[in-house]
Length: 395
Image (cartoon, rainbow, N blue to C red; front, side, top):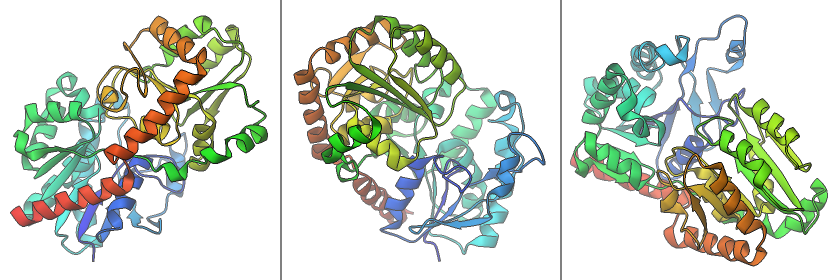
């Protein structure tokens, strides 16, 4: 019997093993402390087309730490028009019946995201008087005031019922506190475990990848999207001035990969990789050899890539937006730049490319800060479990 039922639409599956790894790691950490049942709603697969592969997702799959069921719902396209309206209603209609069939009444429900997951669980929790906690991770809260009135009403309704709104950054918590009583808003950081990053094997990994020991490696890890700063990276390439630099881009989604490739081909740089769907183990190897991580995002929660950079002793150049300044101490663990500013991105990169001692000192300060703050998945799971215990004692 699951004591806590979690809905996480963004969670890996056998077809999309890298989807929502942050949710997977959060749930795995929680599952070490209490019995957890997990549902991850999936769109009904059409017979042909780019979404037909959804038919290969099983109804149930075990990840060792937890088992996930994948119930289906009608996901209407175009997303721009329907993703916060009709599709969320489809999940809210489907999920209670699925949970009633699959699980005995849990003590508590937990939503991996506010909108689809939280709103989907809402009627199930209300009808059975079950407390609900929801995670605020970034996009919904950052864009709350730009959403339609219909979408905002669903978010308001969900947050009004939730016993705790758990945000991944202080900046998101401030937004949540404008919507609900501040006493129900708290912050739990995501994290990274330094032991999982093979930094001691950097020389060997570089040799295997054909990257010279003295070459400076600059890494980008994120979506190939406007929000992640791909246009700014493309515009900054011409001004990045360093003779021996290798640029690595690793992304699992987004439409701007071809744009970035064209910009790289037109730039003076000839040592680069633009990768797609890099497995986690390979990604940790890239972090282990990286000297600088660039995060020129327009908006974030607290990006997991920054925690990964800190864990792997990598200096960070990131936008001074959302939760990034909560992670990166400007001039100490990295450099903060204005968002949407290719010239500032190039200037910051050139500064670190020209000074190995500076970036190495920042890298060492980053991993110290990670450890001092307790920004690990184990600590995340422990704190989430403590919040659930508190909520249950108050219910």
